[in-house]
Length: 202
Image 1 (cartoon, helix red, strand yellow):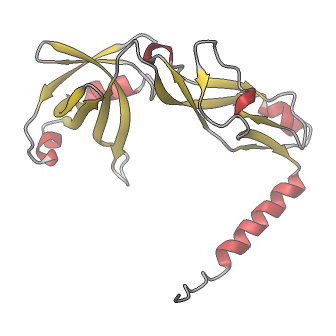
Image 2 (cartoon, rainbow, N blue to C red; image 1 turned 135 degrees about the vertical axis):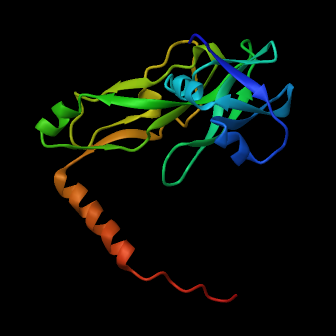
């Protein structure tokens, strides 16, 4: 995956709201060989970069120096959804990292046409590889699945350079009958209506 450039300026340990009012997003950069430091990012430029996916390689340019980073965590406003703060993890291009990769399923229409209900249980798979080899997403074709069948993490096709970290037997997608799906929903609703048991003193 090619990196994209993103400019940043160093910032002192002031109040983050002052940074946001200036149209910038407060962020922190850290890594195994990097002492953590704070920066500020132009809000519009950050949105452009985030459009490349959660595992996008970023060339962070600060005061004439460039550090290769990936987004580690994004803090968003709980109601409005806009970005409040970003954690950047500095990476070395020749050292493997662990990354969580979104799983996209195809062929759901074929399953539902046969009367099955698709349950997408695991939406991300953790892998280990070099930073430049992290895929934007992984695709799983479920068109041939029937009721009672499933796809596990170990069934997902990975390039030779990528190692699976998620347990291979974790279920990614399963197909159930409509009746089973209704029973599961009824049990969940019943559990929600039951009062929580009071904690007993020991």
